[in-house]
Image (tube, rainbow, N blue to C red; front, side, top):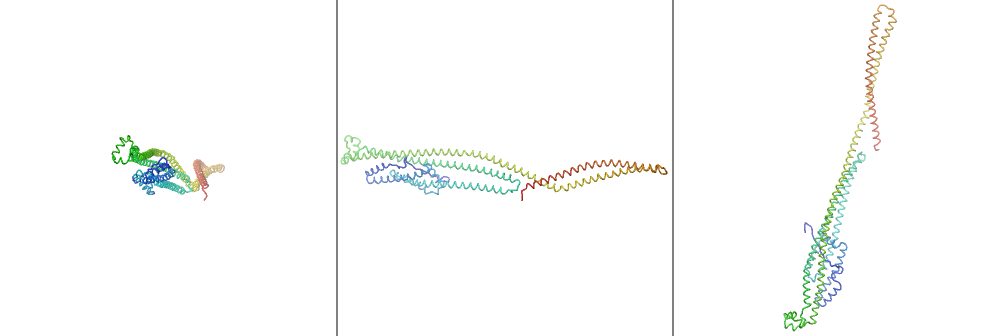
Length: 509
């Protein structure tokens, strides 16, 4: 265990022809015939071997079914990764695999085929369980991710809809407020999308690196297993050398038992090496033993060739796994480099969505200012309409007062002018009447009347001057008052018109 995780690698060796096991039926028949020559013990051993080969063929069929769905390397990776990821789901499979490894290491040469067959059979079941467990784990992980993201999307949409629903439909800035909400959530959605892309990228990259690590671990185990062949190969080579020696040298069946019992074993060896060929002591029984040794050497050489081929195949498989792991590392690095593109896209999206947020905010501010301005105008119009009649009445009273003042000035001047005329008429009447007759007091009366004419004429002239000034002043005053009156009326009319337009635009109810 490393860093709280299980690191387990299962390695298997496969012959080039899985459908045929490790021997053809012809070779099995040859082994059975050989067993008849070896006696009871040989028949028992070969029977075990051929039975094991049959089980191996069955196991190879089971493995082919697994490999057809996942591929050899895929099964390696799935098994190794699954044990680390969902160890509780198939702990028994791991123990079986470890037991198989120990069993293989302890197996002797003659039991290797039977042990390998058992290993293939049990390992195939373990791989099947591991692959199914890994597939279930991945499916659950994908479902959990989809559900979490769907919930996150639903919550985001719900929050947006609540904010939109909170806007009063009669709010004059409703459209701008909805646009601002949409812009804000678009910005959040952009960041969320980028975060998910970054998460998916990291997950894919990490899975590739994990698979690459599993392949390297499997390659190391396969290489170790290939090295295990060295001892078997060395043993085979020793046995082959021994068999070849026995296929050419003298043995106890040559010359005769009595001769060799007399001269002894050391002499037997000396005769076989030095003068045996000269005396030609070989017998048919000895030839049979040498033939048997030659056949054994040929069989062992065939087995040696097969073991070497298996060893080379395992080393090639390990090299292929390491090459695939290297390629996966490169892919993981290339995928991880894609984060830069995600960052750039996120930045571009952020610029776009932020512009939308800014535009929406500016539009809302502008709308609020328009609403405030309209509200102020509406209040002003209401005051104008309410105060208009009073203002008009006050100005009208001022106009009326000015008009009255003008009339009073004109009437006063008229009286002064009339008095001047009456004074002149009185003087003329006096001169035409009493003044013409003469008499006591006539001169004094004429002087008095003349004085009245002078005074009244002077007062009439002064009154006329004063009237002209008053009329000029009143004309200016009346002009200003009439202008003010017209302005107030226009303001009231305009305010009433705007109020009527607002009332016409307002929705019913």
